[in-house]
Length: 311
Image 1: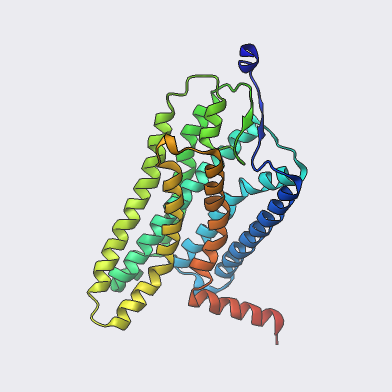
Image 2 (image 1 turned 135 degrees about the horizontal axis):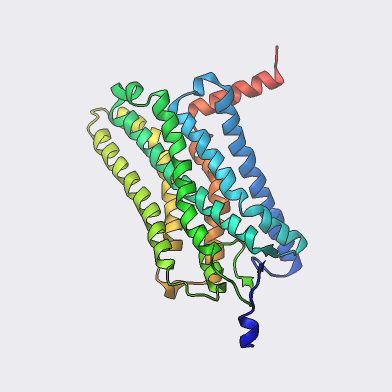
């Protein structure tokens, strides 16, 4: 048995939601429906921002990029999970597993950063409305839109390179539905004490972004409370309420996932929580954040009107 456990493997089996066939087909139908709804809603937002000139503003440029990163974030994991549920083909090469891990981490870090820059946009709009056009120039907006992509890809590089140097042994079953960090380390037959570096990096990205967002909203709250009229306060809070809802749901699940004692570790709970932040939240965000926006809804009505009543 010892010699078997030390045998190097280059193929993993993603166990995911291994259960009775009827339940697997139910989960496939459920997750497929959610995935298609996610793609449809986000691509709708991206299309509206691209086609409607009155949406060519910094806020909507960031929204379109946020939608794109959410599409990529969920696409990294969900198709493989759906394939495993439908065909029961659970094998994945270590190289493909590493690529999946890299992009999942990269898009996750980029999503964190986009929430920060979107919070900054709301801070400028509410706390410095007279200077919004001079602070949020086209050049500044493009820089804010590109920054999260760069940070995400660079941040994910270090842990991905380190994991690529590890060797993996039998048993080669990943007790998850995608190649996440902790399940991969459990399969390594080498010393993984350097994982502390990855944890520090993860904490820095997650907590750093969360703190910056909270600072933005602390300043926003102080500014709103100084508005003399109740109607003005409601209007100001209304412009950032959706963003704060998205932040609360996203960080609530992520912090629970990555900032808990090891004694609370459970593969089942991890899979459920991972489904929440990698499948459910990307599906809900367009409806919470964008499709309730008055300008987005106006652009959508206009597009529908042109499509069905061209004359």
